[in-house]
Amino acid sequence: MKDFFKVSPLKILEGSTYQELGKGNLGVFMARAGLGKTSCLINIAFDKLFREEKLVHISLKDIPEKVTSYYNVIFSDLVKVLNIEDEHEVRAVIDKNRIILAYLKESFDLTRLRGNLNNLVKEIDFAPDTLIIDGLDFAETRRELFEGLMRIAQEFQVEVWLSALTHRHITEANERGIPFPCNNLDDLFSLIIQLSSSPSGVFLELLKDHDRKGISDAVIRLDPNTFLAME
Image 1 (tube, helix red, strand yellow):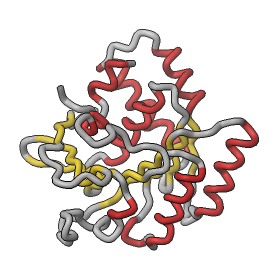
Image 2 (cartoon, rainbow, N blue to C red):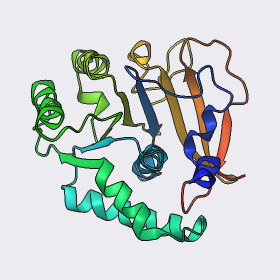
Image 3 (cartoon, one colour):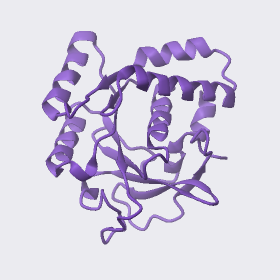
Image 4 (tube, rainbow, N blue to C red):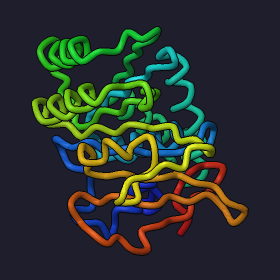
């Protein structure tokens, strides 16, 4: 699946400090509603799964069956885009290395998450490399929860990717140029990536790259239908 790595949204990290988020760290995709945060997260998931890494996808808004359907739709697109011939074998690898958990109706908390991860490791020998958390309301979530997520990332040696909702009418940003709702949390995130749309296309921009200062030209264009990087 080397062809996928050329079009993965993580291609934006080619010129970054470490070229990855790294275990024990938090990363976030920021975008307005409906722009494609979940699609980008799932493409990141495929980037990991195609490397045969283990992944846990945590949804705070959809039941597992709906999340699975998202994966199936995007995978069908990838089969066409990448001309995947061994589709059933690749799908089997994905199913073996991915677990989907749902925390609905405000049932998400760090104690439950840590317990579920411990059970996965001890009961079925499933030690994830990556956690994806989709649907967390940054504006309504206390800083302590993100600090706890960082401790979990370090404890279980996983990298954690989240999605954050931005708003057109809220233009607040900190002195480092990080916009709401991450403007008061950016010290906790190693990578911050913003997804935006304009008349000229859909773009990813790297706003924070670990401890690197003065990021320049860290922008890639995405296909608006597949949310894959355009070569």
